[in-house]
Length: 167
Image 1 (cartoon, one colour):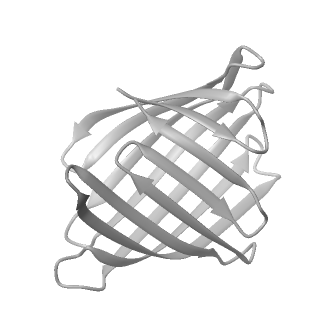
Image 2 (cartoon, rainbow, N blue to C red):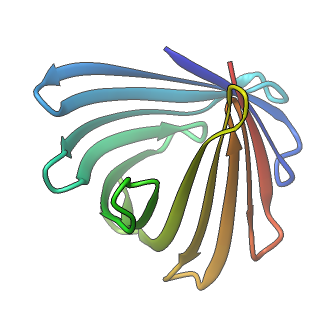
């Protein structure tokens, strides 16, 4: 199980996140994840998703259901396609999209992004770095991510930020 501690400037509370990936077929997993907000002492959300990975096409597709703290059910669909920019695949260009719909499919929210990801191994001994620069096409907001081993910092053009530590 993957776990992390998360903190963002929006919520100003520490959240505990957990994710489990259960293989169900070749290139297919069932991903279960959820988050506990320590300020309110209750889960923020619980999510179950079936994800399919095509290594030949460097893409993934996922469909799932999410239950949030307000007692509402949402359906999710997500897709991602990676295009290597360099032969060693350390620099890549990604396009990704998501669709969130409420349980009656009356309210639907779409997101789409294009991003460059640069992986730098052994910046220092046993220290890897990943830089991600992207643009949310529908919301017209640039964003960045800096990941160093267990630490991740995210920020966007609306001055929103969060930090994550993987346990």
